[in-house]
Length: 254
Ligand code: 5HY
Image (tube, rainbow, N blue to C red; front, side, top):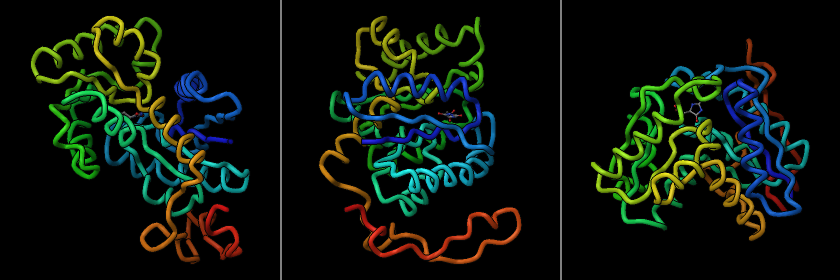
């Protein structure tokens, strides 16, 4: 099977790290492709960034459909463009926040999300609510760390995130940690080893869950809300996103 991980920000050092971590958990025989779009923000830290990351993300889904990808992971904790991507793709599409929260709810009584900037806390709570995970979420905390500090050699990102996770366990009454950024994927083992509790990395969780769905021959239903978008013209800068009719046989994965 072929799984495409899309890091909707355009920082390739983070994309390569995400790809390496996904390959480390993928089954033998699963081909993992990790990409950043050709357009979009270098990091996603606001609703504005998320909105402007969506076209590039959807372009990568369209390319993946032509390349015969079996499933997709949106490797950004805001799960930007998730529903639109599900409309476009035949195979399953998972966001890392969605996957991480569901996995965390299976292995503990309550989880704390530890994310980057304070201003992204609201979006994490919004997603927890939307996914029916609010009752498992003890708290969402931020380290006030810009996303790109995770890519800066010599930054104290790892220490600050580990300390915030430790505070979460002491103060939130949680027994599981959810990492609130794709760029934290390579810190998972260290933090789990240091704190002695389960730490969930959404990149790994989403990759293995997409694999399981593909192996179950399950994909996004095209009956109703997530059916392929109706073909229509797009004008201006988005002209290239014009959707044309596709043969019925391609509407639903075999
Ligand atoms: C992420 N931003 O996972 C989110 C994290 C965040 O560029 N990749 C980003 O802070 O929302």
